[in-house]
Image (tube, rainbow, N blue to C red; front, side, top):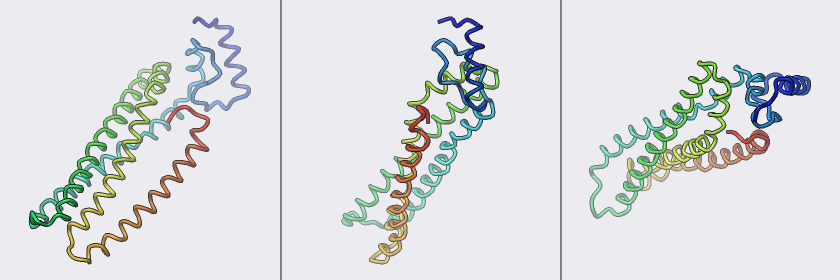
Length: 209
C-alpha cells in the first residue's frame, strides 16, 4: 500500500516527539510504510543486536571441547570388557551425548553465522529496509538456534559427568564426579531462572529474540 510522503513525514515527526531516537524501528508505522521505518533506523542499535547473536561462537568452543573429550575418553577406555554391562551402557550414553553436542553445536553455529553474514551484508549495502524484513523473518530460526544452543550445552555437561565416571574406577569415580553433578544441577536451576527473567523483562514486550 502506498503511503503519501506527507503522511510519512507526519508519522516520523509524531514518533520523534514521543519516542527515543534509538528505537530499532517504529512499531506504529502502518503496513506498507517501510520507508518510514528506515527513516528512524539506528545503525548503532542494529549492530548491537547483531552482536547479541554470539551463540555461535560459544557453541563452536563447546563443539571442539566435546570432540576432544570423546577422543580422550574413547582412547582411554579400550579396557572396558564386554561383560561390564554398566560401563558399556555408560560409554554408549557418553557417545550419544557427545554426538548430540557436536551436531547441535554445528547447527547453532551455522544458523547464527548465516543470519549474521546476511544481516551485515544488507547493512553494508545500505539496504536497511531489507535488513529489517530479513531479521524479523528469521525469528523462528533464531529461536531454533537458541534452543539448539541450550541443548548442546546440556549434552556436553552430562557427557562430562559420564567421562569422569568412565575415566576412574571403583567408588572413587562417584566422589570425583559429584562436584560436576552438583554444579550441573545448580547451573540448570540458575539458567532456568535467568530465562524466566529475560522472558519477563525483555521479551514479553517484543516479538524478536
